[in-house]
Amino acid sequence: MDSRTRRYLRGRFGDHYRQTTVTPPPEPNEREWGYIPWDSGGTTMVRHSSWLDIGDLETFLTDTCPQHVYFSAGRYDDPGAGSMSKKGWRSSDLVFDLDADHLPGVDPDGDSYASMLETCKEALLDLLDLLEEDFGFEDLTVVFSGGRGYHVHVRDEGVKELDRHHRREIVDYVLANEVDFDTLLQHESVAGIGMKNPADKRTLDTTGGWSARVAEMVSAYVDELLELDDEAALEKLQEIDGVGAGRAEAILRVARSKPEEIHAGNVDVHGAFPTLARSLAEQTFREQTAPIDEPVTTDINRLIRLPGSLHGGTGLEVGRIPRDEVDDFDPLHDAVPRTFIGNEITVAVEEPTAVELGGGRFTCDPGAQTVPEYVGVFLMARGHARKEKE
Image 1 (tube, rainbow, N blue to C red):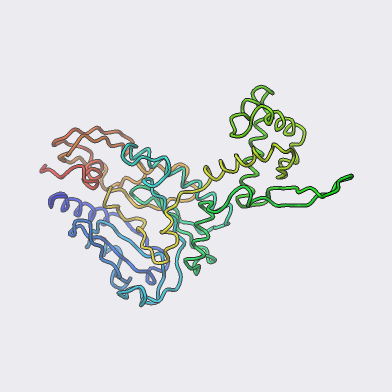
Image 2 (image 1 turned 90 degrees about the horizontal axis):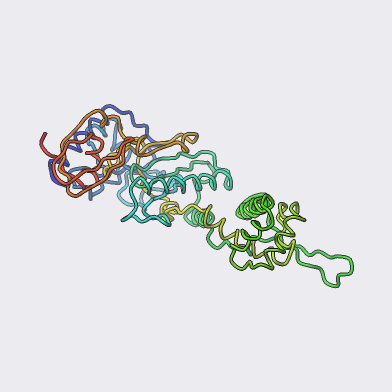
């Protein structure tokens, strides 16, 4: 990035902060603060700063006009100490990071920015479902990172003092690590009339956790079968690996005769049924896990982006999203700073680039051209353009 582009972005970031109120996180005086100034070219972080060093946040942002701003998940006795060992750790938020570049099925080189963010939004909804339904967390702050994904900050009292080991256990649960169909099954010995040896009855717990999620998936699948005629149901069943014509007929027969037992979690309603349940369990793990960035959640000292600040790599706002607005949130529209709307600027585009932003799609050819400022800022921040003289 050349000096003219850097000066322009620094100045406009400062204009934005002069027009915007940024709210700090809870207990800001107990957190470490860090930032990357434009003067460094975007590579060197100034960190180990305390709230006292920052001073008034509004003044700091307007005077410094940082490229990126961070605060620590951790709370400390002395957050400004120069080494982690001297800070005196007290507690930490539980932070989850979803990065579109790292999601299964996403091609960072081939997929559009809009497409990657859409996939990341789906992963966010899966994560929130796990955190709220399975863990019962209530104090959640959802944040668009301003770049490639989302952050979720959990501040329930029960998580603040968890160490790295216990945070690792939460990560393993969210990712369904070391969980498979067999480990979820509950076993019960059932004796029947005329039976020499008790039978082993296997069931899925329907009250909560991954077991309940798998049981729900199985029940939903069976309900779909029951709505089909025999021919369509048998065809659907044979799409499952390991289910041939004979097993399909047996599974359909027991689905029609014992739906209540299946809905209660019983997977031993017939010898062929566990094949179906096992396949649906694997589908549950694939579809309902959330591909979080593991080191972020286990790191009790992690620095995370400040909501309300601007992302120096896109010019978009790092924004808190009210929980009831997450479904409708559109980062390519809702995260565009108002400061950059209503103006046009001239930039020199380095190579053919398509930008979907602010409700429009812009195709930019190489060379100097005039574009809406928010598009120009996005292109310059991402290294696709440089500022030209007006």
